Each structure stands twice: as C-alpha cells, then as structure tokens.
Length: 335
Image 1 (cartoon, rainbow, N blue to C red):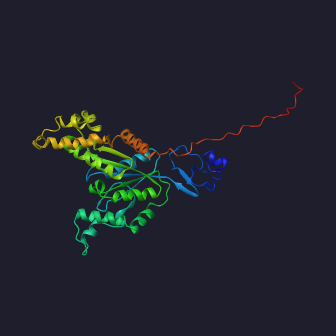
Image 2: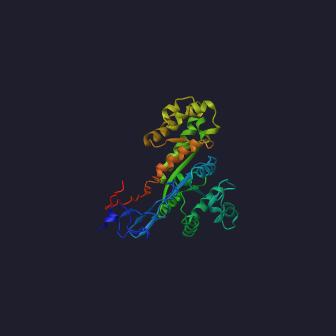
Image 3: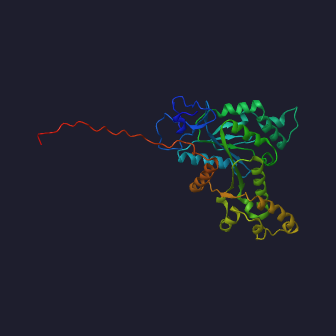
C-alpha cells in the first residue's frame, strides 16, 4: 500500500531520492536551491527502489552533405544563449572535421581508414562504414559508449550520425542503438535533415521524402523532418516554401517543378510512389535557417515537444512562513 506522501506524488525521503513502493512512478523532490531557469536540470524519477534520471537525445540523420554536423553546431551554439546545455556525440567514423565541441567521438574507438587499410579485411568506404557501426553495436563497443556518455546532468545530447542512408532505411543498426539508449534511460527522437536543394525538382523532393518516411517507419520513435540551408534559397524558392513544408504530392507533380523528359516518361511510376507518401500522411517539414535565432528556437521547441521535455520536472514553488499573531496582547493604557 502506498504511503500518504507517495499518493500525493512526492517522495517522503528526498535526501535518499527513492520511494519504497514498487511499480510506481513518482517524481522525487530536489534539495538543491531553486533555479531561475526551470530547464536547467533534467527530472529525476523513481521506479520502485531505482532512481531514474531522464536524459534526452536527438538522433541527427540524413543523406551525406545535408547539413547534419552544421545543425549540431548551430543548435549547440544556440543553446548557450538559452542557458541550456546541449552536448554532441560524433557517431561518424569517417568524419574529418567538425566545428562543435564533441562530448564523445567514435573515432577514438574505431576509424574508417583503419578498417579499409586492414590486411585481413577487404572493405570499401560503404562496407567499412557498416562494419564500424556494427562494431559499435558489439557489447564492448556499447560498454565503451555508455562509459563515455557518463552520468552527467546534461540537458540534451545530439548524436551526429553517418550519412549512409541505408543505415536508417532498412538496416537495424540504428534501431538497435535506439533500444540501448532507451535502456539507458534516454528519451530519443529522430531529426531527419534534408537539403533544401531538393526543392528544385519535385521528383528529387519525392525521393528525399520517401527516405524520410522509410526512416520513420524503421525506427518507430518520435520524428522531426527538417529542411536545412534555407538561407541559401533564392527569393522565388522561398515564395513557394509552403508547397514543400506540407507536401501535396499530386500538386507537386503537376507543377512546374516536374517538367523533365524522365519525369514525363515515368509519370505513372512517380505518381504511384507519391501515393505511398499520401497514404501514410506522416511527412512534414520544418524549415531551418541557422543564421536566424528565431528559426532555431522554433525547431528546439518542436524537438522538446516530441520528447515531452520538461513535463516531469517539479513545479518550482516556495513556501512562505507567516509570523504568528500575538494571542495575548497587553493593552497600552498610555494612549
């Protein structure tokens, strides 16, 4: 039977940060000084005698060259202005350079060049990258990753993933990574990044949307699709932006964006593929201009909503002690 204090939703012994009741979620109270920023630290939940510190993660996915590393760098920089802590984990063993400060770098564990140059293995770039990710999913690799992530009170962690699209669309490597992150008390959402250059042609945009849809179906986690490099679009492309944020495939295919000879020849096939996107009705895009702080804020709000960020945090309240009224006041006869 739950104690009265547990029924009220808080732990009776906050200094121990645990509840004695089993199979019952409760929010533990903190002994720290109330912060002016209620998002400054993640919530701590108790499940039975186990204390769970919820952490949050973005899996930044997308084709090569779509702006994944730039997205991570921009969001990390923007978080500093919002008094939030966002760290980045590089999961690309073929990365050469990035401008963000990496909390964990998978190249410290395994590098693509070493795999390709190994005498006992005959891998090319694609096969070598798959081998590196499979190696990370081995028990030793997962233990290394968990130790590197540590138990810091981080606001959020961005996982900058490789640009090999088959890792997300039909292989189970990233799905297994998501399952392990869940077991480590992470709430995970996917951020699929697509270059806005796909807006030039309707069929290119259709292929990118199909890749986004396949990733959503494969990973089965909260998902956000982002159109990057919006600052590079010309004026006419920005005027037609609404057509691509919530794409109506048949409208796109009948527009001026689909006029090539190939599109006319395989129009029926293109329509059939577009019908798949319409039937699922899941693909929507958020535009991102990394030079616009408001655009970054809107995207971060969408990610927080997808992760249910902050919904388990205690409401910051302050108890006031009122002075006791004097019961027996002596009358003043001098007045």
